[in-house]
Length: 527
Image (cartoon, rainbow, N blue to C red):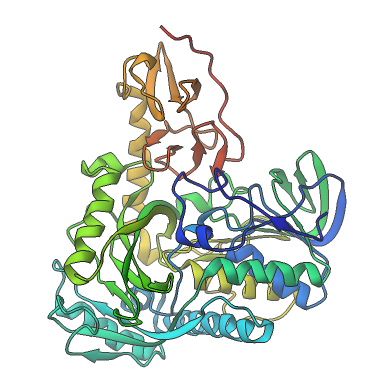
């Protein structure tokens, strides 16, 4: 039933073949799929942090809500985060001030601070055991960067209302000799323990939750899912990137892959803090990749050191000639240099980050619609952006005036971000040249078990995968969203779109939007 949950196994139920520490260490929950027509006040598509927070806020206010998820709760990008809960934004307040102005930079700071406070209050109110901890965060220089970055961010963050402080060295990392910018009152938690508890509270308040329920059609007042209709006064699309929006939003934000390792360290021997470097300024990408670190309790003798980074545009790993395995190795080498007591790497995974070109999420009414809302553009701060999304959209639905409404309006146009917009648009357009390129392999006979590739069959681009048992599966390699040629992701064994970030399993099933439908099967004979 939609009102009760059972334990679930997340094997083959996430947006990649690698399992994160969160998925591996939380008691996963599963609900029944939608099996009848229903009518509610609000239907929320997506059971990640944005969708669950929205549902929690609305059910707390007595609203009749349904949440639908095409996999299991948090089986998408929320389950693949590193769960920094921060008002230290990866796009920097100095940049926000340039693009949006001093007052809006302050609003952004206030909203992210409010999101941290919301999580803390909710944990206390609901008695949730999710290892929520307040701690300081430290921004330090990448070797390619200069001290002016920290000085500018110090000034801008303080103008925005965050009492940052320049310190002489980076606490907890002896290798880094230079200064750092300290952000006080940041936080971390176990995201799935927190969100699974919120799901239980949603159900207790009369909310309905449906898993393995795929949204097939979305229009004003109606969602078709699993062949059944959900009538609703309001629809919230909280699917990391909107699946109801064909083009508009996807020109204003772009998908990046980010990589994570989690390694054992002796318990209590690494300081409790968050760390981020200022990013590789020699990178070819518009969104500069940076490295981010935290710890997490693990067992009686060890903690985990969790380090992430090595980002690149989704479907474009080969553009830098760096394989996914090399990216994990680069992270490991970086972390061992700075935390030499680190031992075995016990987890590795990757996630998808949606980067808006003007550095702010898109939260609110979908352009052109009256009562369809979107929450997207997490920009590497998914825990706070998702929480802000839930707070803001629930206010909009209930007619409550929210001071962040204009700041995050999805219809906004940011003239000062035009340069980055044109660079990203050029990158996207260039991917269509893949139609003219040779395939990864010449014949499917070249595929080993558990390998995939794109190949040319006559005039057709074909995505082929050979299972571990040797079975050959083949699909059209053309993304059903806007027709880009897919690329094989050997790390997560998926087919990824280099234009807008749609992703498909090795069995052709869509696992990331904006594509709504699976890949069409292509009949191919073994030679």
